[in-house]
Amino acid sequence: MATIFGINLFALFGQLLVGLINGSFYALLALGLAIIFGLLKIINFSHGALYMLGAFGAYLGLNYLGIDYWWALVLVPIAVGALGILLERTLIRPIANEDHLYSLLLTFGIALILQGLFTHWFGSSGMPYAIPEELKGGTRLPFMYLPDYRAWIIVFSLSVCAVTWYIIEKTKLGAYLRAGTENPQLMQAFGINVPLIVTLTYGFGVGLAGLAGVLAAPVYSVSPEMGSNILIVVFAIVVIGGMGSIGGAILTGLAMGVVEGLTKYFYPEASTTVIFLVMVLVLLTKPAGLFGKEA
Amino acid sequence: MNAMMNVQSHREKLRISDLHAFYGESHILHGIDLQVNQGELVTLLGRNGSGRTTTLRAIMNMVGKRSGSININGQETIGMPSHKIAHLGLGYCPEERGIFSSLNVEENLMLPPNVRSDGMSLEEIYTMFPNLAERRKSQGTRLSGGEQQMLAMARILRTGANILLLDEITEGLAPVIVQKLAEVLTMLKERGLTVVLVEQNFRFAAPIADRHYVMEHGHVVEQVEAHELKDKTELLNTYLGV
Image (cartoon, rainbow over all chains, first blue to last red; front, side, top):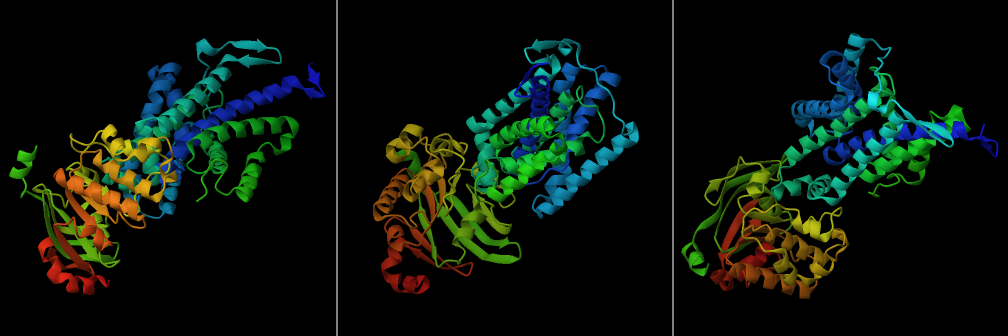
């Protein structure tokens, strides 16, 4: 067994890989939450449920509609995004001008209903979803074995994050999003259809959650609780990165996955709490978050 | 261009009748009437809190609730959402300037969509405001107050807006920049643009304005044509508390 300074490299790299994969999901989910919070100023508690819905979308598509993984990767995020647009137009929009607590409770309620429905239909034990044929192999690296599907998750989700970041920071569409985050009323007075941008942003943000759900289906079991389990951690990540900071959400998501992985190796007992510990430390020293602007 | 302008010189661009505006429970405007023709520059004068800024915001439908009639180019807009009003050719420059800090100077400049086809080109803008050209990659809010005001003006000129609503554009600026803004406004008038100017600095507004509306407590209490200024100076001083 390969060890350096008493460190088991196989185990260490293994945990690092798990950390990177978890980090990829954190990044995708935190990115969606950050975009939605930026423009809509709502804390989208249904994000985890929509992620779960994405995984179930892949599962149901495969078993009942003959939609394979690759088609699910395209179709499910669009379907989840469309559902998000419907939710925004019919439920979130009418209370947009009320206190933020209302939208928080509303989206929390939506999450509970979705989770309850899927528990009722499928039970809580979880469904298996096979890794697609093309990604079943793996690569033997000097210190570890890297399954293709795990490598795919990291590469694909980080590419999606990078493209989203580029669109927001470098394009005209992104300028609308950034300006709308600062002063939506003035932007609308300039002749930009802000309500439409808000709806599309919400649809895009939850579409990312749906995409993460499809990606997750083959590695985590598809279960109604998968969303609520991950969401609390993702909220902590958004807080650490800084509310509304796009790049901050991505980098923090990935970094926290790695931190969690390393903790699993060095001090496994703390691995489920380490992110919250980081959150407390960040809030004490930099209340606006690592990448947030001081208010 | 000039011939066309002369034909249309008396055309009504903006007519407001019995405009009421509310923020939540507060009733701010109590029945405003005013009217602006093409190529005219009119000012809204009055003390702070008299309702001048609210009048501009109500025209853009940026208040909580409004009622009455606002006719722009002959079209009733009281039931129109804010973003459609802009496309009738309106350019709004808010008192706080509204420069976006997450956008650089050029992104700020390019943000508002064109509302008409004959706006100023980027080259024209940069010739008129050379400082903006130099700092085009700077973060919008890193500019000096004067530069930010230039940017806020340039931003709506680029869109081709031909009815400008300008709120306190000289506030807190150095005399040399106020002078520059006076030149810009004179040039815009020559081009036939229509301007509604909320202004505290009466000496800035007096030489370029065609008409003044004096506001108090959400009412228009006096209307003074440019040629009546001499006779009504006393009266204006009482209202404005100069």
